[in-house]
Image (cartoon, rainbow, N blue to C red; front, side, top):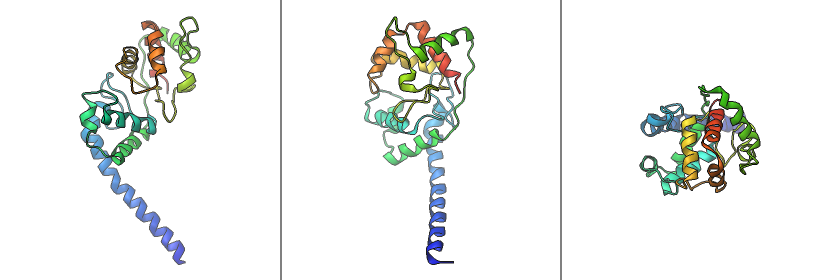
Amino acid sequence: MPKKTLYLALSTVFFAATAQAADPSVEALVANRCATCHGAEGHATSPIFPSLAGQNREYLIKQLQDFKSKKRASDTMAPQVADMSDESIAAVAGFFASKQAKTHRVSDTDLLPVGRYIFTKGNSWSGVPACTTCHGENAAGSTNLPRLAGQNSRYLLSQLKDFNQRIRNNDNEAMHLVASRLTELEAKAVADYLSQLP
C-alpha cells in the first residue's frame, strides 16, 4: 500500500476514533444538564420547556451563549451553562440539532386554518407580517432563526408573551412588534399550527 494511502487510512481511523471518544462526554453533559427538562433526545419533558430536537445548530449556540452571558435572562439556564466552554456549547448544540423533531396533536383542530393563515399570510388589518418571511414556508427557520415546526404550543405561547412584554430581548426586535399585534386567539392558533407541523 502506498505511504500516502496508508496515511489517509490511518488518519480516517484516528479521527473517527476521536469523534467516537467525544460522544460519551457530550451525552454525559446532555444527561446531567439537559435531559431533565429537554429530554435525552431533545423532546421536552413538559410543554413549558422547548423541544431542542432538530433545532438549528447555530441558533442553539447563540441561545446558549446568550444564557451564559445573561443577555437572555433565565434563572434556570444561566447556571447550567455558566462553566461550559465554547466547544461544549457547540457539541451540545450539534447533538440536539442532529436529533429528529416530533410533532404534537392539537385538541382544537378548528383553529389550525386560522394559524396557517396568520403564519403564511399574516394579518394586514393589524399589521402582522407573514411568519414565513423569516421562519420559512415549513417553519424550519434558518441559521440564525429558530425552527418552530413541532415545537410545544404552550412553550411558543410563553415566548410570544415574553416578546410582547419585552422580557425576552436577546433576539430579533421585529418579534416584539409581531407579538404585540397578535390577539390571544391568533397567538394560540399559530402556536397550535406550528406544533403539529412535521
